[in-house]
Image 1 (tube, rainbow, N blue to C red):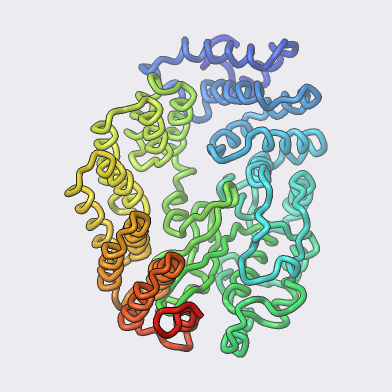
Image 2 (image 1 turned 90 degrees about the vertical axis):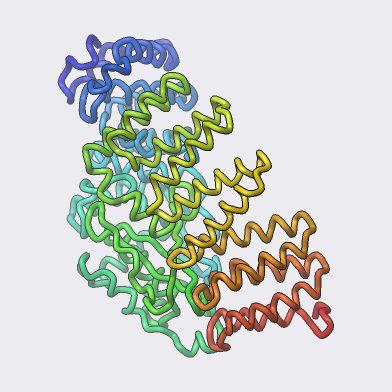
Length: 546
């Protein structure tokens, strides 16, 4: 292949494959290319490894070959070589691959796509990657939410290969509100993350009329079913949960949010289904990609309810992602040169390992100080290198300082410091950190403070220290009096009372309910009020279970 920076951008990958048309195994190829890169690319030559250069293509090819050692099947070899020759696809795959993905399954999906629809893979490589990384693991059976019976949902087992072909056709016919070629994998995955049949999506494309800029209004096109809410019928009461049925019958907030989110996906618009706890209880709303790199995350969110955060699901790992985290991760970062450079150097550092990688991480953070994957990789390398407690403490202190403006991340760092303090028996530092987390999140992000308080209460219960647990419980109630509503009830009160009942601490449970009612003052016509009555119903006269 010659020098890492001597061949034209479009040719470097394909030229390499032409020179290795016959080979014995993927492992030998990987070692050969890795050795050449490490020799030619020293830490003093960081500027050679830039996005869009031959050096980047060589590095991504090295990653591809390394993965093929364990993922490749002999019969898939022609498809895998063709995929490996697609520099855009290979880069998109490794830029978005996370430790929680299943690479073997994802590569299998991509190979099947390449074999059956090579023209679609060539036209929409990032869409192919998004489909592979979403459907590399089973779709969760509790989708889309807990307020509809599974049997009512028009579920069809996802077929990512056929979906690529179908979406490529819709893209070609210009039936989407966005050009899929303009979107990143991290955006495309919020279009493909559903198991609905094409008939449902086509219904939405034909019957939901809304511009991209005004798509937030789709939420309110579904009539709110007030009688159903008043009867406390929170589960969908009808046999089928189609989009047409929801429009005809109306629904409550979860149905409005689901309808809007699915309609957006049908029209090629990335969407998320959010839930959150407000003053009077739970609520659902949705968000959508208003323009590439810019999310609108509060469509249908009630401003007066004081929701500190909305939670959605990241379909790449089926774990929660908050609206604040989504906006932080987006911020047009993927499209900025500094972000792309930091990502490339971080990925290269990960391939090098503990000793050689840190200098590349430092370089990445120099040009993009808030590049979270670089921070996460440094934490991983510290742990793998068995760094002493002082080095870990300095790292997490720097993390907290850097992300002081982002409550979720700041608390993440503080919790790591808390773990270190507990492990070393620093009682004063433990108390100081616990207090910091409670106080700093008392205003806007009280969900984080309540979560930390619940953790403290839980620790004391596990130790059998019920007096201490009660003290921490009452302190948290006072801290968040008058502002936390649903979060305080569902995150602290209900778990504490249920745990007390399970452990036979009946008087503790009863006293906790009395104190909570005095502090929260729940009204009977809210979800929190109804849940409160149900919880009180579990405790009878004299503290006996009913």
